[in-house]
Length: 216
Image 1: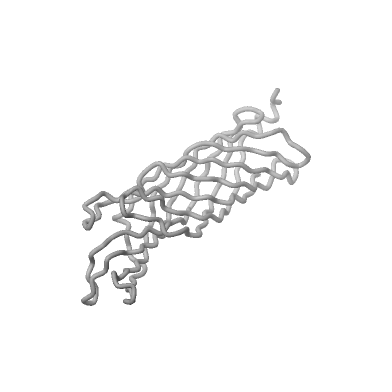
Image 2: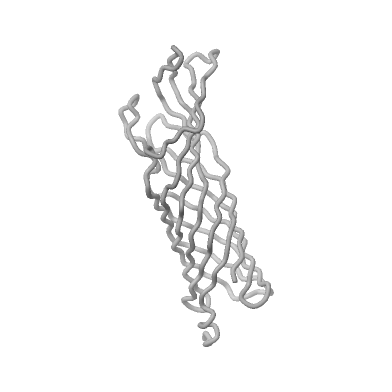
């Protein structure tokens, strides 16, 4: 049974800073993923008590993520025609998670939890670095950096969130949070048509983060 004092303390607010690794999973023929990008997010955490071991967890975060894709092109630069491009995406999003947090009873000073839910984010800024690849392997490619590609990135992104972690009590309602979250994109993270392939660009953005924060 939940006491009246527990209900009076049913809202918690905190802060987090979370390093991450992110990547793009392409779904367009001849597009390949070429690696991961390091990122980070930071912002506010909040929890609303639903029952003794269940909370609605949300917040607001600024998130930096990205990925690397390689795909065909036929662009001519400096009188040389290039056959492929390797693009590194650098995105800044504002994200609001909507999750259910399921907790164990306190074991010592620790409480273990799992989270499940969904995330919605708005793209704030999109940059890219391009490396053009010559069909002749003996020829050196050419690069372009810090390109503004905001028009090529959708405004909204929807994702599923899964995570596990634990809280370490510091006394009262204050606790340190440590956990790992997997954020799996549902929506296409690219816009436009690849004119070389005459196909719509399609890739899902995913990331795994180490969630570190404090709740009061």
